[in-house]
Image (tube, rainbow over all chains, first blue to last red; front, side, top):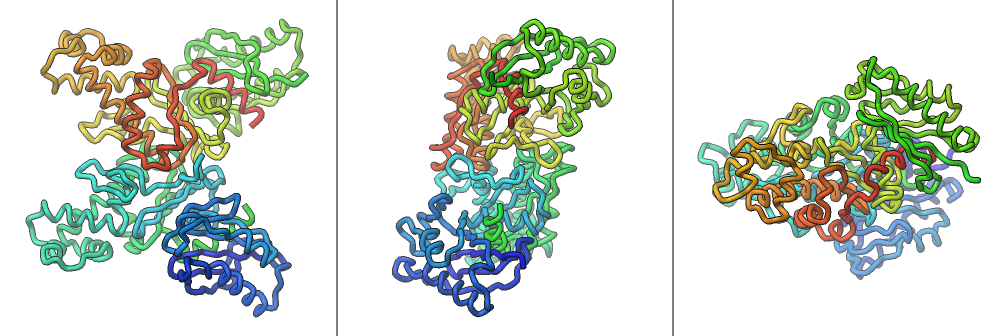
Length: 319
Length: 319
């Protein structure tokens, strides 16, 4: 029987785990809560215990596995198998992961950051269809990404490659970004960014709009609400949607001019707006690309949803 | 004795040739005129004859060589070894190159487009210092480029990767680009682009300026002239220089956010402005990058000048 791989997607709330085939199919998946108490000291032991337990339960042994791959928040040192600055896990200092896991489980361990690992998942068996040139953009609380070019995940000289959220796209009245600069894609295309835009264009908007009423009444506004109202034709929401789509479409166009990937895959919570979102982004992408790129680089929605992480993590073992 | 490589840089005026070591040192270089008569039918035979002649002259045989690499204008089919649409060579139809060269010279032949090949040269033994992550931008009549990421030249799905000149950077009163869209880096950062900017800001400028006088008197204006006047403090030329530097610095910042290369190498005729050019671009690069990228991606001037093409072409044989 062909050996399997264990994929781990470490998040601030839960740790997702899966047994994945060498073809990228999930055979088993489960999750455990992320225990961030005691400076996150329980996280790695909890993972090890859960994997041991699951292997035993399935009447398997480590001999049935090729290795373990993991995606993690924070700054990942791939060679040493450590993570630094993953504050939402309680890890204040550099945390060893590869060493205890390899020692306890006796399997080779590979790690990369969570956005890169999700990109690998989508590239391998998701919207990327295993093409060697795929870019993944995730629109969540922030905007993250991962770039696979000529079959390789691109890390760059200091591991900062794929920071798509910090491309500069807004020159209107650019919002300050948490990274220290202004006008980043993240400030206008993340869930928070869409709310930023709603507030900005609300101030300049005089017509009728449910969205404007909510903002003027200091009611809660979310990215989902803006997208839903835009679908219904709410005037202010449509303005926000168009600007969002232009910023993201332009960023995709610049990515395509540089890398001409087969597919730019858009995922993350905001992408739940689906085809409606894609149609808008495609319109501006078309305006800002020249024919050769426009005709060969496709925009698509992510297909694996929450499974991208564990599948991409597993792929680290064989790539 | 270690085998050598033959590098060819095919241009519209001359064909540059060189014998290059496996370490990227040029041992011999020479050139022949590009004969574009008869639909460019003489180009490939001329190259073959010149190589045969040089090898004989040096008392060498094809046994002393590993292979031949070439950079060409036009759309290159790397697998078939053909070039399409290189109109400045007189080649209207798809031109076979690999087949006649391999048949006549009995050496393996590799080809890529001229900007990619120059990028490889600078990455290998030029300003890139053989780092696996280097981006090359050439500022000439147009703006071209080449991307080496994780050690691989990035072509993308349809070979349009590295089209840095067609990133959209100008949202002011964007100029139309030959590619069919507007606001491309090429329209504001090439030699032609700098003259475009001089005319645009001249219209809005009321003070004293030699550059403005030249424009108002319908005298010739060149990019070199603008740069030279900017160095001397000519008010309009400084405005043009600052805008040029901001557009290019921003494009470099976006490239760095995506790829975090060790070095972005700036070459081509416009880069003759040297450190003065680099200082301006660096200023805006710093404004548009976040610390991790700003501190690890370096901007530098190309070091190989006209030799980048033959050296990079040679590297195709061993990479």
